[in-house]
Length: 161
Image (cartoon, rainbow, N blue to C red; front, side, top):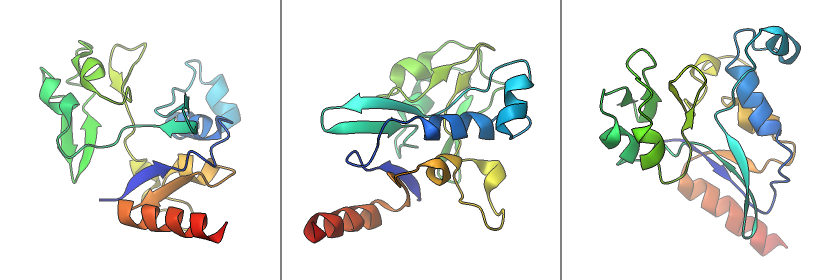
């Protein structure tokens, strides 16, 4: 399954990925209009300091997802390998928030869990990067693909320098 990886050596903690994520999940999908929508757009990705650099963090869509196991209503579920939240079923108990080992699930003001959904509305749009956060990263620290390919690219870069 394709996932989003972060190269800690390249991440500047600029927040472009966070902003792009918030705008992508707004009603208008436009930065200026999103600010005027009333409710501020909410990001599903967060940049955090790490021991060797910065880390742009979001849901890992774990094979054995603790958030799914912890969800008492079944709102957390998997569709085609992607861990999603059914916001109609979420009761805001935050068991998923507590169970996530990456801290990638956020409680929202609407009392539902928010997390990366891998930008389903961007899928299939011609000429656009599949994920808003990856497209917005100015240093190309975010990579979408398989882990083996990400690892290979990292190793090639280390050998080059």
